[in-house]
Image (cartoon, rainbow, N blue to C red; front, side, top):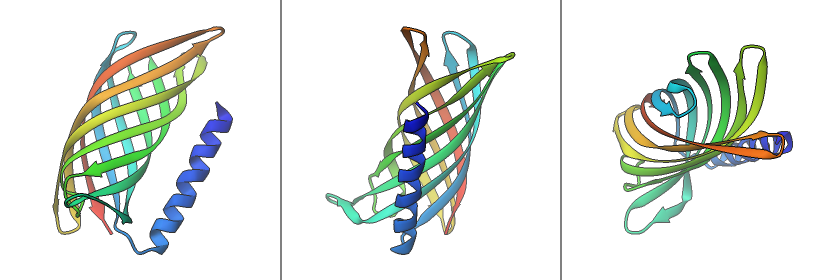
Length: 170
């Protein structure tokens, strides 16, 4: 698990460096999310996400592809957590506005009381993003799958969620 997180972080760093060197568009946005889990009920989240456009990839007839890396804090009653996630976004327009679909994967730590557990995540979402100059606003909804290992047993939890984000492009 730790090796996978280190590899994901290294890959995101290398991809970000090459994207910035190519002069691509980069967005930094904050998000506020809400969802539900079977084990803990309501779950809120605050996150910070960095997204960069891949200028070498285009989607027929006019779409675009972007990569993202984010840090998210989960707040759910007695449960607190930190997740690191990376992923890809497919936009319907070449300027990263309009309809989009995103895939995120990663891992993190969830803590309750004095004990913590490592988790891995996979999220699928879709939404709409508006931009006016350097400012952007987005709304998305989707499903996150969280896998937790307890000894020889892996527990999968499916969590529907909605997220509102605002950011700046540079």
